[in-house]
Length: 565
Image (cartoon, rainbow, N blue to C red; front, side, top):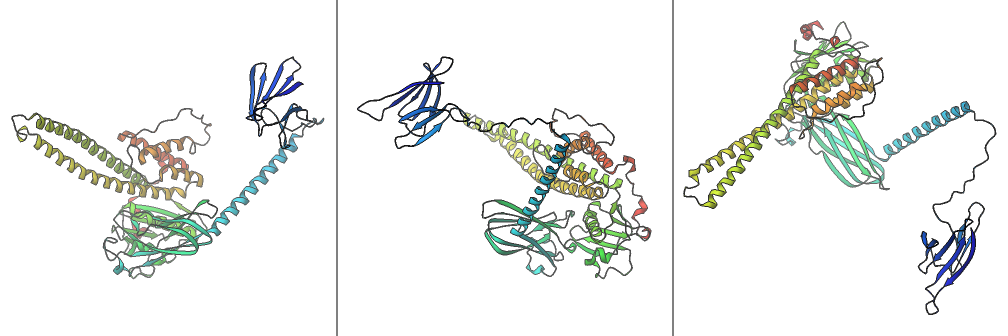
């Protein structure tokens, strides 16, 4: 491209209205014209066609084109105050110059080895950064939970907090310590039913150094206990504006929910726990009940009674085999005792603890699934009836209004519409009361379903790898949440189906081809679909244990005898 010439077009009266014209000729004979208006707008024309437009930082007094070492055709503009700038058209040019090719070939073996070393170094650096970050967060905010049983505080409790004066409460202190100033601190304390936290949430505008808050936990209702765990979740904002959260857990004393009692000699529901080491004594496993007068020295059985429901759970220590047998006439009541027994056995002994999944555990979960689904169906039936009666009530109202407007010779009571209106309202109110009761039944059935599933997961955990156990817990170990169309059954059915196809596929089978279609989540509306859910659950447990379905242990009736331990 050769510069042909340039000129300035302006007016003598108005020196601000200037137009710079620079004409450039390309080797192919095309004439390019650079036009710069007084508005600092650069326009490039090819003949009479506009090809490019750009805004300059100032209105130049002179324009020229220069050739740089690695950049051709740079437009240089000069301002009235002596400012010189070099401009170019299009995107930012690359100043990279490719080096000459190496005459020798590449050593792929050495390159792969170097790449592996770099990847290992990257993983090591990432792990170190994560540990540093976690350590920094722990030092930034320290959360501790202190629990203490206060059985003599019944005078300080209101009637709404406890059902009987014999039920104790547990004092909980959540302590926050920080070396930095934190803002928007929110603390949430959570427990599982039937436990209730008196003050489960509080907020602090700012936190500096230390702060402690006390609350109380007590038992409310006769629902079966799932866990004695208490969880404290703290969210806060740092001085840099970053949002963070810290979660801590602790265990409440078992005396919050249990009392020692004479053991029962027989029971209908039995859970067997095996240990690889000699059995521990009850003074080691349950030291909080060792001083009770109801327990005698040398007994091989311990009786624990739930304060809210009155059910008794008996723990029998085997004299010959290293095993424990937890038995009760109510299977759901044994969930808490089995959980604490397994946790304390593992904490006091390094040997693994094994469990046996019996048909009674499978039947317990199946029965709770049926109860929960029946409660949902009952709610749907009542809701549909309320909808029909509501439509009928609207029709009666329209007819009553029409009769009043038309002023018929017959009086309104003679038409029978007021009687029909009152009877429809009474029927709706009666159904609303039934709906409230049905929802309470569904809530209870959902809690019992979660309790039975938690007991099953406790037994599965000892017989499966951690990855498969976590996959099964994610599929079925969530709390039922009532909604319009989908509840525990639909979500668990879809999750178990995906689990069986991917994680728990049979060993030796070929890789399954990923499906390109997504199966929509459909509501379960019949008992036949519920039976399919039960079948998938049994198949998942069978593959987790690596055994056949018929290998699931059947608890014999005489296993519930204390003397046979």
